[in-house]
Image (cartoon, rainbow, N blue to C red; front, side, top):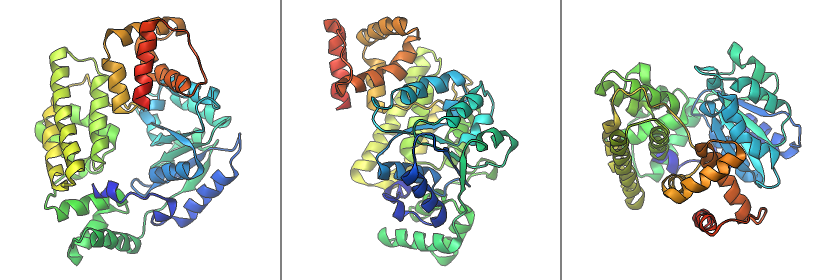
Amino acid sequence: MWSEKYRPQIISDMVGNEEPRALIVEWFTKWKKGTKPLLLAGPPGIGKTTMAYLVAKQFGYDIIGLNASDVRSKSRLNEILTPVLGNVSVLGTPMIFVDEVDGIHGRGDYGGTAALVDILKKPTVPIVLAANNDTSDKMKSIKKVVKTISFKKIPPRLLRIYLDNILKKENAKLSLSSLIKVIDKSHGDIRSMINLTQSLVTGFNPQTETSFENVSVEDGVNAFFKANSVDEARIILYSMQIDPRQKIDAFYSSIITSNLDNPTFAKYLEIISDADNLYGKILKTQNWRLLRYLNDILIQLYQNDDRIRYTQYNLSWPLLNRIRWDGTKIKSLSSVMAKKLHLSSSSFVTFCLPHLLFCIKNNTLKLELEETYAEIIDKEIELIN
């Protein structure tokens, strides 16, 4: 997608909000242990998340990305961050980024807010948060312990220049009235503006209802499986104006963490596989017109199914699949290690095994293992490499 193709590669590639960007760079330049975490606040689609990843890249940090669904539960938050905060030297140079932190106060906040605030009070690594709305009363406890930098909507004049540049590179044109319509409808959301422009240029512009426009990944997946009809589900799917890779990953990770019967599970994974194959073909051929068929594949996932809720995995597909599907050997190893660490097997393979592999790979940990288990570890390290 153009929004991915023209994603800024360095901070100076970004458009608008020059002063906030300068303040963020200054904060990173002066950061030391104990420095107040940053909260990037502003409307969606204007570059908060992109800025966090670019500044991490510029200053050499390994970013640990989370969102509201990861930090609503105290136990879940501690599972993810305890290894990071307690073993900084082992895990490289980590930086924590929590996106859409204002969503932590939605349904099912099981101590996550209080646990996050405790971490924010005594930061041992750089911590950056992003929020679309920081003015609610529920954000007060977080705002007391962070430094807030506000982003503003990009002025239409800058959006027009930015969009004209993309159209020129794509050797494409839009009428003046269409340009004005696109910029006005995007409400300063750069990602939405680029996606809508690409849709118009390729002749594919699905109609969406206002009530479902620009839904977040989490809300989109949850609403999709709660929809009352396939038509409503289709509208929600089209309204998730995000990178196609992210959309496929969101449905995949949500499905594999749900308690489903085997036939339904197999059906869902077959559909996800078809979607992944299509996206792979698009990347290989650069024929982005094929993207119009992605939602036609994903809509086959629809059925009113309250067993599926959005869940985000922080592991890559190849490693996640290898860990999940490598048969009895992995299950045997996880069973033994889970008992020793007083965890469930699923918690061990999801959160502990990746760190274990990383430590062994970098010669910071040596274990005496039985031959069978040593073979598993060697396979996983080969995959990481």
